[in-house]
Length: 190
Image 1 (cartoon, helix red, strand yellow):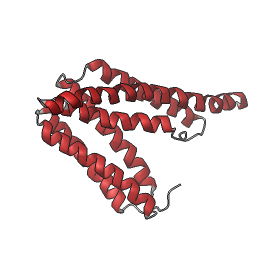
Image 2: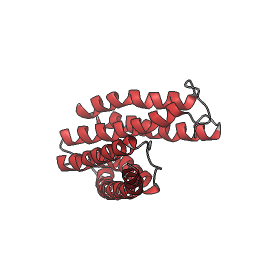
Image 3: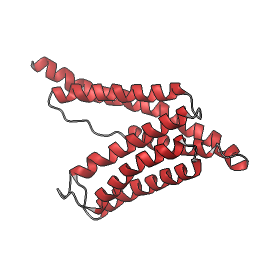
């Protein structure tokens, strides 16, 4: 439940800043400027953490912030996937597996909306999956650095990626299980 209906708040400004960083990140990764791309991703992660922390602590949680934050998360994940696949850092099938999950969830949310249900509660597995993916791809990118840092970062990044991918689909299944009774109940009432 939002604490405020104000739009001009520090947490919302941080979310907008994160959104503005998406095209910058994509431009940097596509031109092969991995160092600055990593800095942009790190700043995105820091502002993501800060906007939520500030919003909760100072009672500045708003509907706008609740919309901007997940949009920024998804845009960073998608732009990171596309940029890294374009550069052959990750295989394209990973992009398709994660995008299919997003399409599945979009369909589920549309079905729920048709029966008057707006969304379903976020599950900790879904949060864990997103967190793993938000860590995985920057660490895989860091793994492209030659030498010891890259040698250590690459397997760690792939471990986060595999956990994130599996948890992403487990979370989708859990959301479908949560949605099923709501969809059945509405169908029976009709």
